[in-house]
Length: 445
Image (cartoon, rainbow, N blue to C red; front, side, top):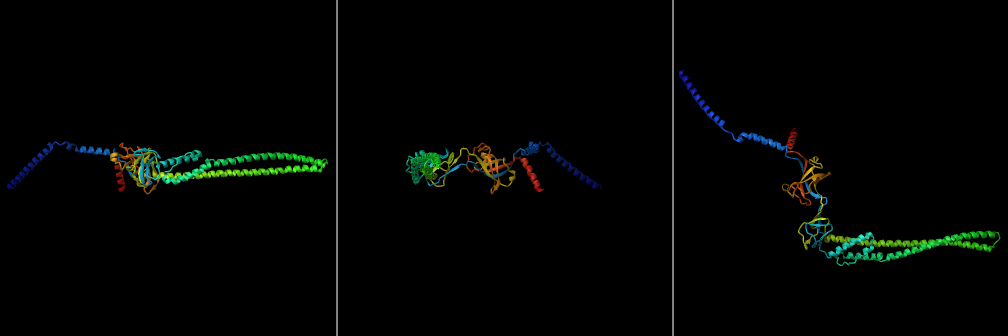
């Protein structure tokens, strides 16, 4: 019994020693933890993280993240650049302008090789323009005075010019050299004489009628005297014969008037024929003039390079005299001085209900990276009501022209492509996150 108690006491003593050693060890670890000084990061990490999260959350309410729709756009203009195209194979014999030079509408850019003299044909062209203006005014004398130069080096136009000079000569002979005027003057004088003769006949008829009245009164008096046996029968018959003779004069005078009227009508018909012949000669000459003008214009189109509008000329490739040009080749463009530039795009039907005129648009040009040059800003100013295969046609008016938001000037080229970003609604990043969450929630519901 005493042995058992002793063993139990020993076991308890061992346990107490073990417990005392564990308590001593844990006290050292706790002492180490208590004595350790935490670093700044360990002390403030949670607070810094909280502040960062709050700042990020606040930034989402300030960062702009608008709702947009993208479309492909092209820059164009209402008065776009005009191209100059060669219409005839040949060498460039003369070049009068340089690239980036100001030119005016109708100004000669260059000459293409031909068989005639460019200078003579251009002078003839100016002469024809003046002739048409004078012809329309009816100033035939000044028109005939224009042609003092004999053009002999017109190449392809020589035959047409010869036909025109023949028509001009006939017209001058008939109208200007006196044939028409002389013949008209003769007919006018004949008409004046006939009018004078008719007046004399009318006066004679009036006198004859008055004489007839007197003869009738005398006849009636003689008849009374004859009935009263005052005069003889022979004397009465003589008076009756006088009255009959005077009555015969009236029809003769009327016949003379009719003859004079017929002659006057014939003369007036001659005048109408003269006027018709004059108009016919004028028509033949006009047709000849316009025909030559048409041939000259066709020749100029083929062999003269002419600026179609006012503006700045820009060659598509280096150009020099004696260079061979192929028909259909574009040699230059002329950009107008005052050019109204806008963007043209086709809107897709997706989200089309969000789009309306007046919305802001950003144009990111393919040729000018927006990261370096910025974007062109504008507004939708037109949307077509009818769709095409490509979508709804729309136009964008540029707010600041070809100046980007980075103050970079863009050089206009016809057909520059761009990505149009239409801002349908100004939103912040927080709003976008909220709407996306609402949208996702609505979809799952």
